[in-house]
Length: 307
Image 1 (tube, rainbow, N blue to C red):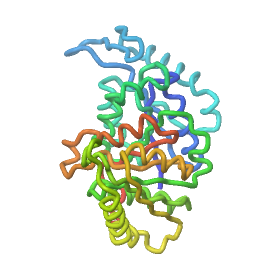
Image 2 (image 1 turned 90 degrees about the vertical axis):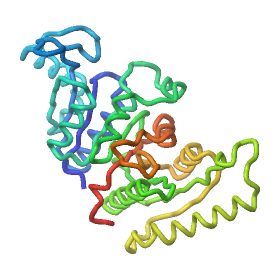
Image 3 (image 1 turned 120 degrees about the horizontal axis):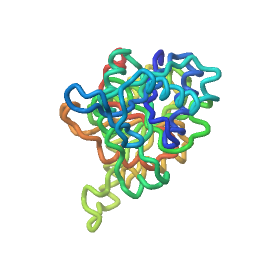
């Protein structure tokens, strides 16, 4: 399923968790791993200088500087590179554009990256409640799934066993479901289909009564059974659950309960052009808080054969 992987990194400690997942996935799938570091943003016009994304300093564009950067990356990922056939690639430009350009050129099956590129405490993004701008722009436009790793994950890929897919029955989340099923079937993992009844829809001061919630839970289960289960084509390693609460909180609780290795969600849920959609608030909050990687699926390209 994964023949080419793209790991986008600043070669700084904030990317270490994503690096482990990327290299583990390369080994598991015997895939080609491209390690991309975008060195910085070029100056205007025909300037031979660029601004280094890590230091903020102006640097000259030269073969010597490129070789120095690659050497630094080899030092950073030395142990991980020992048993790897990964290729280190450098580029100069806006980071998200260069990530998308290489992903498109190489037709990669997955992009792996951190939630942000700032060197700060691991919990800082949680309190800021916002992911990095590069990650948001890549997730919005990528033609493949974007797996975001925000925390250490010791069992994610080598012991791949439980995939949670969150759905709200939108067209976008159906594509996320298809991608999650394709992956689960490929590796023999259990697929957990999850929907949360959003109690905030009525407002926290006037929550829905229990009878109304029970009716909505029953209706959601019916929709899963009619829309999603037939697509599993006899695959019996699955479960389906409908809970009520604040969606991102319930997804995180459910993933923890199922010891999830991966959470799969749609990049957005509104029925609009993916090119115009912003990262959904629910998936963003899950990315910031999840104890396992989160895959954001924007386009159905890689799952067209399952529709």
